[in-house]
Length: 223
Image 1 (cartoon, helix red, strand yellow):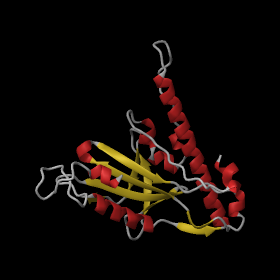
Image 2 (cartoon, rainbow, N blue to C red):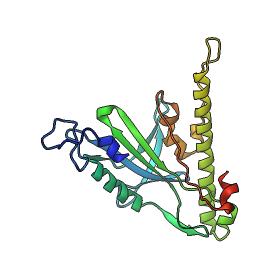
Image 3 (cartoon, rainbow, N blue to C red):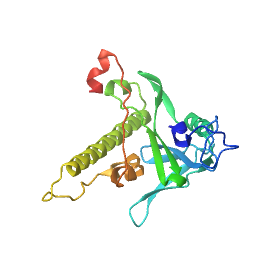
């Protein structure tokens, strides 16, 4: 994804016209703005800040959710973008349980804004769902975290379902059919509030990639 953002015809940025890329993925005249943070329950932490400062989600008068206090860095090339993201991921909260030695305890959100193209790419690495048997040895705090993870993933699933329902209705809507937009319940969690534009903005595209375990013992949970 990083190289795709900066890719053009592969010419050297030192001698090429603005917008062309060199062999390191740097593009003359092109920069992107990056924010990265993690969401755990109803709290957010800045992953671009060494101190992992806590962030606030506030709604503006037009209903848009703003991430207040998030660090923002300008990135000039694909390799630099990958390096900054790697550093951000290294600050993410993890913990071990019976199924995973480094289980993510939060959802990681990376927002890449491309001013020159008037668009943005939002990448989300979600914490995995946890079954009851996965949390038997958890402390009360870890059990609460697991419940919050599962609740936010359920809210995300509902938003995707309603978004798909709206797209299907628009695709086959006739002249006499109701064309009012389907209400997407994005206020169900902090995660879906942050992703509200992905569900409501006309022309936005949404893709979900699932990581599933191949073991037969995980089949029922996966399905």
